[in-house]
Length: 194
Image (cartoon, rainbow, N blue to C red; front, top):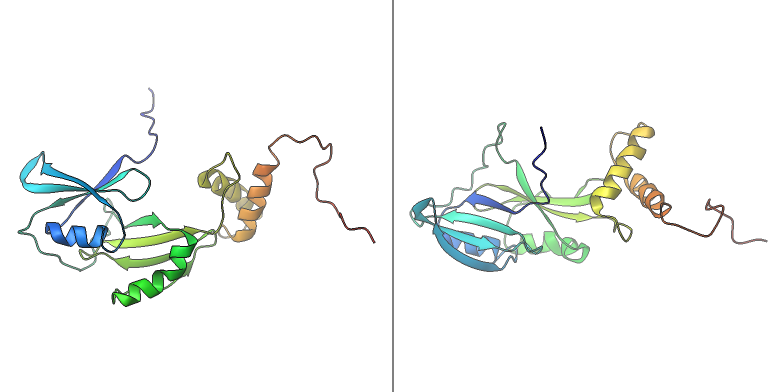
């Protein structure tokens, strides 16, 4: 038996209400370009809208102008989507509260998650949306997941509750030490002698 190895998220499709609500939220609030539209090939009464979240992958929405937005929280039972998280730059993240407040969109305020900061709010259909911003950049040649896996090992080894910035910093140092060096001793040193 062999795995069906995935290589990333291809797209996420959501059931929307009317077409304009989707365009206004996904492009008009979150800034995702509306890249194309076609009929839902499995249900001719719906349209299928495609948005680019910024990484070339897609968020797609099935819309029907007979459906109206309902802002009540979407279900969170097993098998349901709890929330979608989108990466934003630190510069954008630092302005997110102000920009949400300008639109009178209720939100959680900034939540410190140790290795990232988050802000949560609902889309017009009640789906929880997270704006997430990492507190670190991985070393060249590594991704965020590499740093977090290393930070997890450090956290568990220290018996700490959750990943904090110190674990991330130590993980980045550990990953950086995997690069070759001509030094025989790569340990921390006192460079300033008095």
